[in-house]
Length: 130
Image (cartoon, rainbow, N blue to C red; front, side, top):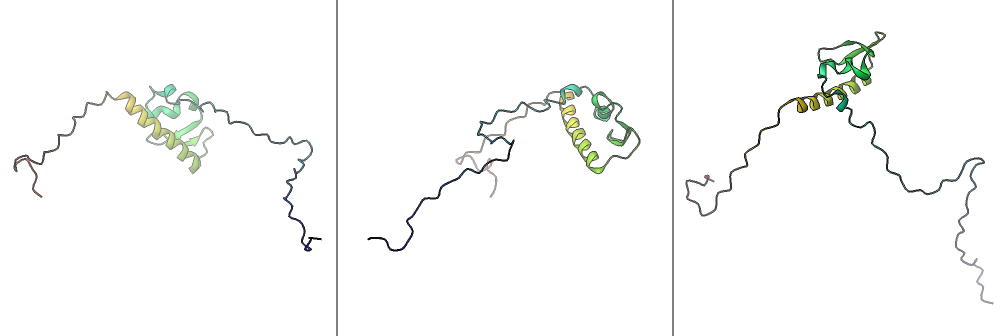
């Protein structure tokens, strides 16, 4: 009768697994553009010298002791800052220092263009020895 004892090939059926009660199913949505985070933090402190950065504005009163570069070493209560916090603050200070120097220095002078290449048929005096 045409059957050879094998089960007929059946495509697997994808069953939807029920979600736990009260948990909505995730629906596919398009990613929305995120607004910029924090903006340009330098703008608010552009006139503040790097050594004074952590003594003014949002940082005022948060730190009690500073090193020679103006980097905080102790919090307001006198406890030494953790290594990770000092590293984070150092990164912020370094960025501020770069931007502050760039904003406070005069415009960079124009750089002269490089001399033109020497043509192959130029006199031997103009060519460099090989």
